[in-house]
Image (cartoon, rainbow, N blue to C red):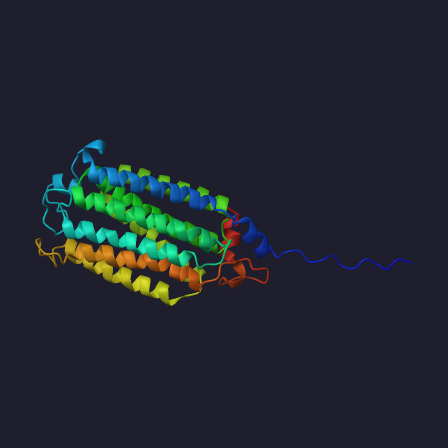
Length: 297
């Protein structure tokens, strides 16, 4: 009499299946979408800086709106109309280099490894857009400046949801596309609200990383840097710290500190573990409450 068949070999757990499905080897759909957009913004920003006539020489709204000011720094001529605010934008490019280097040390075939070079490209786009804006003070540069902000905020929000398993790569890309289009439409309708729109995606992204991933020192330092950066931005914008001819500009400090915070994002990735079994609120199967709610939408 043949022996009774044993129980079937256990298959991969639900978190492992979702992890495999949501992390394609070469790159995620989210990386292709946001990384490609970052490259386009970077190229357009370089054109807006070096050949402003190519994208139209309409001046930035801070030059044409009554009572507005282009931050504290004096406006000059040439390729760097605001030298301190322009050159401090290169801090984002330095942060991008360190981000790319850190990303190479992350585990292969993980969401963090896929996201790291995309974060680096987004930081380059942010730096290029900021440089184009402050160097020429054109409307095209102004638009490109905020696009880099929107890309980083979108990546922060959707990347956190993907890393923790609430979205797979395809849905993360769809959410990112929808969020970016919404921000573009909102900016077109309410151009003066462009900075508040950035805050609306940045703050939820920080909260998601704080709640969905284990707390880490890089994330805490990044939040502290952002807080000091905002205080410097506010002091510059309100004229509380203002020496127009000085190289020490509050807005330049905003650039450097936000670049530091952006560069610490991938350092934070290295201190966290993607996968649902480590997420706060995960059940025995590794599924979080957030992933169940998102999965029902």
